[in-house]
Amino acid sequence: MPSVNVNFSPEHLTTKDGSAFVASLVDPKVWSGIQLLNYTPLHELKDMSIVRFRGMIQDMQDPEMYLERYEVIKEDSTCRLQEGKYRDCLLLNDGERVNHDAKANVHEERRTFFVISIPGLNDWCQEYESQCTRYNFSKHVKTEVSGGKKRSAPIEDDSMQCETSSEPNADTDVNKRKRTEGQVDESTSVGEVNHSSNTVIGMEYHLNSPIPSRPSKACMIKIYEDFEKYKLNTIVDVIGFLSVNPALDASTMDVDMFDNINEIQAQNPPPSLIPRLHAITVHSLPHPNPLLDERLLWSRDERNSTDLIDDFNMLAAGNEFRNFLKLCLFNDSLSAEYLLSHLISSVYCRAESRCLGRFLLNLFNIPHKNIPQYTKQLYKLLDLLIPASHYITMTADTLNDSTFGPKKDYETNKLVSGMLQLAPQTHLVIDETFTKSETLNSNGILSMQILGHVMKYQQLKCNFQYYEIEYEVDIPILCLSENKSILPYDVFVPIEYDDQSLQVIEESLKAASHYLNTTRLNHFRRFLTKAKLAEFSVNPAESEMVQNDFVEMRKNKTIRDADELHHLLVLARLLAVARGKNMLDKESWELAKQMEATRQRRLIEISP
Figure 1 (cartoon, one colour):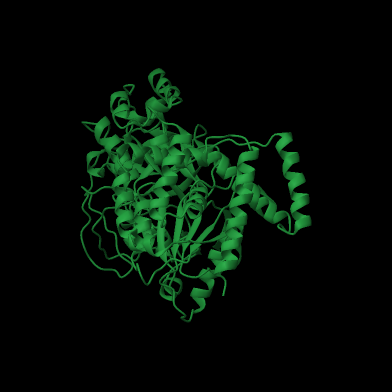
Figure 2: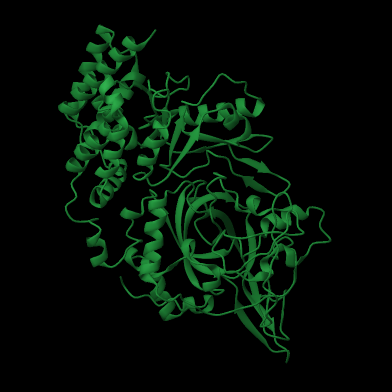
């Protein structure tokens, strides 16, 4: 890993050494030398340290005007120019003041993105990222320390506040929705806060986690360029200047003149809970798998010891993974093949209302009465392989009591997250084996509508009260059920098993767990992500073959319309990719047709 000098203040970033540092960030390996805020306690970092944060853009705040350069009048009435970029507070010495009328002042615009750690990121990913941080940093980088003084709430374009050498009390107040009391401990990591307060906004509301049972960490990212480049729900890795000045906390502001205190508090949370990060550079992540991210490296020897590079082959990994899934699925080869295809699926193109690549799967005929814990055991195994996922039981309580879609809260000017506001390629596993005939309330019906829209269009509706905005998502959804689901999945596969496979399923699941040694775990994790990202094409010869077969299948009434042809093409594509191929061939096409014929026969046989 290249050594990185990060001892720069914002003002020094334009010097020769600072410019060289910014240029060096083109090399992904250099990023490993930057402290990762996600896994570093805030008390070990100083204000204006250069750090990183990885997460999903959950909300985008209104544009903010700031002073990029401003004139400062010294105590002796002489003037100097001060750079203001990458800072929340105006940098003033004792006795100095800003000349707001100076012609040399430069106003610029920046945007604030509310970024949360990737929702549903599984433990093995977090452990790997955390180990990278621990391995690469024996000592934490510390740079300048700066304090702040009590300030007024931001008005119009005056969002930057004065910063002096005085050091105020760093204790800040945060609160729960129920306004319980407690004390903020600044030795905690981002988001790990015991809270309380005499204020209105609570910690859980501030952090805004889509999955309440798995709270995210949060950071407010200040972006200075390419504002339109970024979209809601995308994953970013950001390097920037950390801003944790206690003066940024709404509780230190004079807010008596404002009617809507809630908005002031929501837009200015305690930096000990939600730090600010002024972006020097931003990298958009195509996937959440840290094993395939060059920006998360240990030393070369360490990587080799974990078998991440050597000896990996897509075809071999796919064959081994298929054997693993058969162990988990009552030795049912067909179900294993469909589940494998689902796990490597992703939306690769959007045409009008169609999502090309979507492959939502319902595995049903699960003997829940015989093995009541089977679905949870299966998910635990998949959880070890998928970078990000979320498991929900589809019950009336879940639908009635949960918020599935984001909703704009105009009282705080904040987009309140919903359960389905997930990062791309986050797998949603729905367990319908606990579903009963129960009544849904109005929220339950709305939850079903939001889920159905995500399934059909891979778009998440965000409720802005007076209108709705649809944001593109890529959420592969797997349903496990006793009976065929009523939801609009792309593929319904009844699992086939006999008495013997049913009797030994507990042992088979244990065997599958033992099968996942360190090497296979890393190979499977890489295989699933590489397959999702694989380039794929269809040459003219195979295209003609498909067209001819489509005509014949229409004549034989084995296929009805273009939608069914698209589904067959997606399946053939996934089967080819799972075998290490990057082009459609006759073998994969024929296998897809054979699997579909077998699946249709099963559906007829199992239907009442």
